[in-house]
Length: 311
Ligand SMILES: [Zn+2]
Image (cartoon, rainbow, N blue to C red):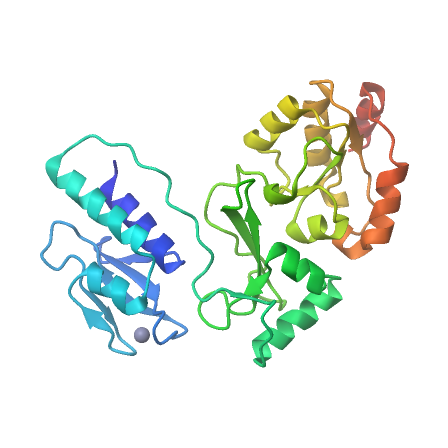
């Protein structure tokens, strides 16, 4: 086990952020959840070979202490991670061989559901942005869409994805303003089934790129969080054999769509390749998307070859 990397992963998970490492990786720097200063000012000593290990200090609000235990209590962080850190360090010192579970994914610190009305400017701007993208209150409730009014996810719409047991398996965050980083997704594996908690594999499935596309399709739509068909989804489609699989990627991702279609067709699945106009599903809106899905035709190898020729 790489103790240092594992430790950083656990700290990242507990703080809902990614550390910046400094002083030859002996310090992890974070945004301070206490004062929410816009720069990373909370320093944590992470060199396990030094007596300073676990010391922390925020240069803005002077939050400080000598151990991770007090950091976790002061910031009210999820203690599960602290236990895992103790376990990790204990194991390092006794040199036992042990396998670890993946760190538990969590939503960004200060995540708030948009379902709870709020008078803040951030709330109003996010609701306005969603309205423009045809995402309404029903979708907000259904997907537990949220936001943060402080920290590194400020001005991001956060859309969680849950697995079939209702456990968070990914989240996607989209900045509502142009000119900034557009997406800041979970830093965990994309090899999950997006929106799995809503998916019924015995019904027709629609594969789309992003969460907003999936919301626009409404029924049984799986976002890829990109344009690649990940292994878990591929295996699930092969074993469950849904009656129909629509592949509906953006016009600019036709190559990827053809690649996915090719893969699934080779397993003799009922594939429909939806060739979209310039717009993506979320821009087209539900009615137009529905029409395209309904009028789509089953893909065969001959048509697939024709598609390959035009790209
Ligand atoms: Zn602070």
